[in-house]
Length: 119
Image (cartoon, rainbow, N blue to C red; front, side, top):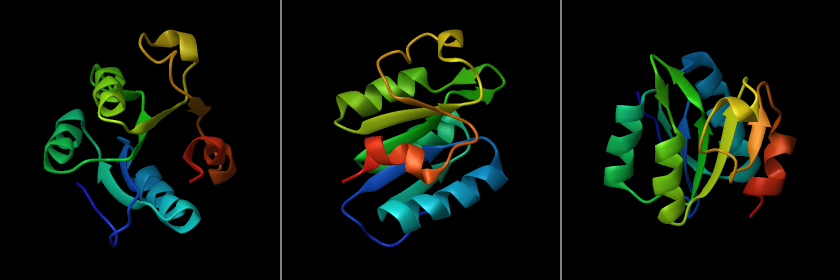
């Protein structure tokens, strides 16, 4: 499932496998930061969205379950110029490839994202 809000110059890809969490957080990202938010609940859905449009920002759940992680996705988004932030309930050291990115611990508040997404 993907959703997108009205047009904004700031386009955020939010990858989160927990549907309820993603819907609530997406609304907060729209209201607080003015992002045009696109949701993806799987790695494949995220890749399809990346093929369709350019994102200026990304908020990525590190572990999507079923052995899927978003670390390679982060690298591609970063190479394309997006500001990438990971969110996770795990410790930073449990996943390779996230040490170069900001990490916020779940559950988080919008204020915790502000240093990374303030524009």
